[in-house]
Length: 310
Image (cartoon, rainbow, N blue to C red):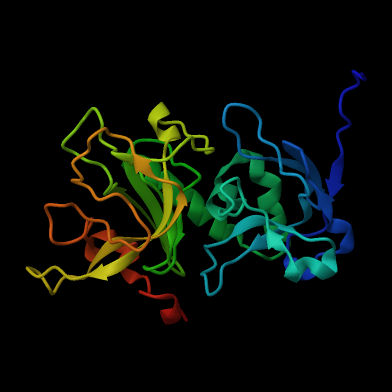
């Protein structure tokens, strides 16, 4: 058995713009936990998500790094992705690398790229490629600092960024609260909402529903490793007592990580999340949470649906 250390292979990339990629930008990440690359603006690296030990990029992870902007999204929304493809001609037919849940794209969102020291060369490259501006990056630095000051804690990298109200996002069912950003053309708002799947009647078992062993690395407490996750979205909701108020409720669109009851003989006060349901409690005729858009500041100015975007 050879005891020689693994050779550090540094991959050379010319751009992160999908329209200007070259065949030489093709890289193989298979089986690696850390990838060293050289960008036109300098050398840097990336890693794969971890649990307790180093994670590794899956087998056959070959293709291209590129900057992804969702359809009709404002300039404040975007992320670094990896497109699996056999060659450059196959780029548009390829698929973006997904995480172990086989649903969530591997990505580094723009707000993380703007705020982490280790991503300095990546954001320099985004500016060099004219994909983002320094003003855009500065807005994300300000937004994160503002959110941290308000919440009195560090801000995670897994917050969704909504640019229209009914945009789907991923919710971990046993998180104390879920947070998200709302991004318009010129403004970013940060919001924290109590998790509607938290049963406040019990302090010992506040989360009656969860999953098996979640692969996501979570820093809060061990119970979060049995998270259970789903794709959800806000929807308009009418309060019969105050029909003049613009409010939204939460609907489960897809169960990503299977959910089960964690509390023995649970009375069903909170309904178990199932695909298609509006989240609600058994003693209430209306769904929860019902959030007033007026209290969500920047979110109140978002278009309701994707088709309403300019």
